[in-house]
Image (cartoon, rainbow, N blue to C red; front, side, top):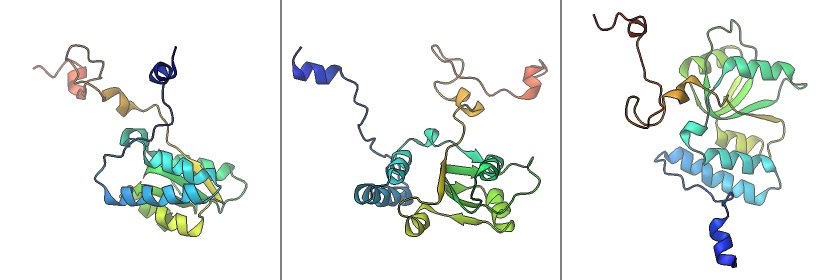
Length: 178
């Protein structure tokens, strides 16, 4: 088998995904972290870059309660929790301790609760200025297995579709057709 045929059969794992987003802030962050990944010896920046270039569905949300669990198990409570994704609020959590979080997005209530507790809410450009190599940070990801993913794909009911339909509670009980 020649070299060309070998290259065609091999799965290319290191191909960089072209970002199709129209979000200018995301594109600027990718430029910034490309530079930092190239100019620093830190694996932190290349990991952030890879996660920034991933699809939006692969940037899983994480709740404030998971952040609190993580900071409670950490030795140093002043470390910055870094999430490439959205930080959401969790109403089951009664009081939020003082935490420093850097994320792409925050829900309104999550941001209010973190700031009310005396914590800091950072953006990735602020993080790059404070910690260009990622020292004093904990890099986190949201859970991959989510209920929302079951609804993705081809529309429910079409041939070849395995998507879970959005059904109201009354329809589940059999009262929807009355």
